[in-house]
Picture 1 (cartoon, rainbow, N blue to C red):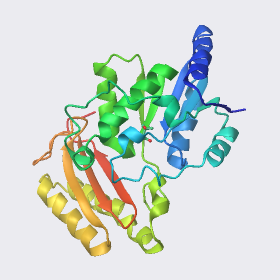
Picture 2 (cartoon, rainbow, N blue to C red):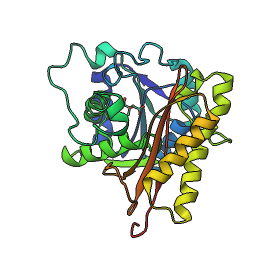
Picture 3 (cartoon, rainbow, N blue to C red):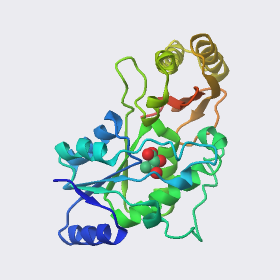
Length: 286
Ligand code: PAF
C-alpha cells in the first residue's frame, strides 16, 4: 500500500527508520498531474531500490507572477491511484504551508546556467527549483533521485547543485517519454486545444529534422535553427519563444557544433507553453 505522508516531521521519522534498516531509497520529485513520463521514472526507481518515495508538491517558488501556479493541474486522488498499483511505498504530499511555514529568509540562487534558455524566459524559476529540491533532498535523503531529460536544463542544474553542495545522491536522468505521434508527454499538454494538439507534433518533428541535418554533416547551428524556425512557423500557430543549440551539460551556446549538444525549443500556444529538446552525442563523446 502506498502511504500518503503530509508532514515533514512524519516523513523525516520514516526516513530515519529506513536509514537505520539500511534501505536504499529512490526518490522521484514531481508536481503531480502524473503521466507516463513520471511513471517511467517511478518504475525505474521501484526496479532498482528497496524503497521508492514520490513527492507531489506544486512549488510556488518556481512559478513567475504571470505563470500558471493557480491553474496548474492538481488531483492527488488520481495521482495516488496511478502510484498505488505500481507498489510505490510513500507519497510525500505536503501543503505549501508545511513546506514554507513562513517566507524563506534564505534561498538558493543559480548563478550560472540559469541565465540562458528556459532560465532567461523564466527569471527566478531555477532558483525556486533548486531551493525546493534542496529541501526535498534534506527531508527524504535519497540515495538516488530521478529527473526527466525533457527538462534537460533542470537536470543539468540539479546535477551541478548535487556536485557543488556535496549531496550524497546519484542523479539519474530518464529519457523523454512521447505520445505515439512524438509529442513529449507533459502535464501541460491538457491545456492544448484540439487544433494545437495536432500542431504540437511539429515540435519533435522539427528536432528530428535537425538531427537528420546533423547526421548528414551539418555543423552550423544557425542553419539548424533557421530550419526549425521555418518548420514551426509553417506548421504551427504557436509563438516561438526560443530555439537554441547549446553544449550539454554546460549549456553554452554553440555556433559550430563539436561535442555533445542539446537542441532545445519553447513554443507558446494559447494556454500552454511547451518545451522539447534532443541531445545529440557529438563525435569524441562517449
Ligand atoms: O520537474 C518538476 O516537476 C519540478 O521542477 C520539481 C523537480 C519537482 C521541483 O519542483
